[in-house]
Length: 540
Image (cartoon, rainbow, N blue to C red; front, side, top):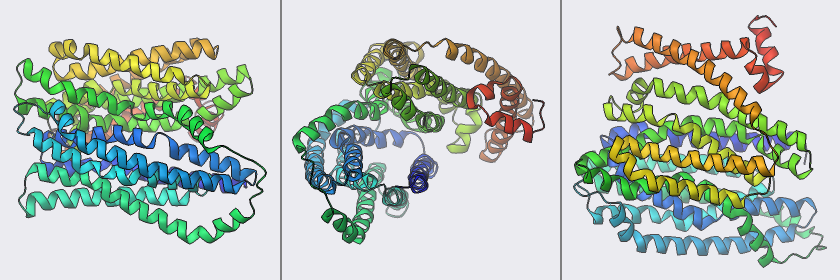
């Protein structure tokens, strides 16, 4: 396969993933308006968070593994092995999907009982209905994901990219139109509207599956022609291959559902703790909606961006480690951490400083939401570090520690959840999450230092410099913000948008200028800095 075709395929898949994530992040604005606040978002998450955990277990990393093995055996002309793996994978994914659906549907009353908040206005039966509405998607999505993996194994990224976008468009359209219709035309209940919103996952999955099947039957003639040229010189035991798949995939699955597991702890404990210390059920429900949906959707934006940039370097770490190139491993690790911190630190600090206009633009001017977002934003730095350190552990073949890293983080979160919430209220839950990720990241870094023989001294020095630059940026943003708010009221969406553009622009200019002037940009991005400096006519 030519490098230009490979790059084109990678670009198409990346573009499709970006569009899909963009839609997934920004549909919350109209959805929040339709639902009328953060409270109903809690009910939505009562169904969606357990669903994401069940989905991770149902797929178990098989679609990604199928892509890898199909590509591997296609490369040596053994097309029959890849096709057999695909056929058996379809049956396996159908079975795990149906079993997961039955399990989630049957366990819905139990999960509802564990998550329900007394006095919130939602009964256990209401939550049960929402959980069961979303569980239907488990029947379809594992098989759909496997077909995407099959096409990717043939280096055909178009079907995956197109189906991702179609899935999101159909899901979001059904979610928004369906919930608005129930509430404002049929005059139904919030519970009915949320059930329709979660059932949208099933409708989106069906649309994506239909798209993929269209691609498959359209290309089947060509795929069958390749199958007839299969060499048949290699014999592979499918049971042993599936054993390898599951052993390799478990850490990836665990990392993929890490955020959902943290959210699930909140949904089991948050409401009970707040009502126990004196909050009403309605207040607890509203605050949980802010922590686990409204604020979380915003802080995940810089996490996704920074992790995407840094993850592109992780395969280079893996390749250098496998070849035993110790110095190259250290260089690549330096690059990973520097790129991650260079992007994440200013984004999260800026989000914390501008929490008021940011929350107002996306949702409404809500003092509780603004306060939680300002507190939550810096925690996103830890979320990014967890994702990257987990990927590095897999890259240096120490994925067994990935699971241990997550488990001690979840244990920390569980232990400190109640005392911190008794002390800090809703923000205590965010603090417990931050503490959990901190423990996981420190543990992972100790393992990386030991097994990759990596010294973090360079990163520590660069982090200190980045923090100083971020301090200068923060001071400039605060001064501009305080000055502007003397004339511009941040309680309206339009005014908040103006504040975000002006203050965010000042922050970006200050951080960018100082990074170039003090050569931090050179250290992080290498020769590109000289080109930028030349275009800006800055002194070399």
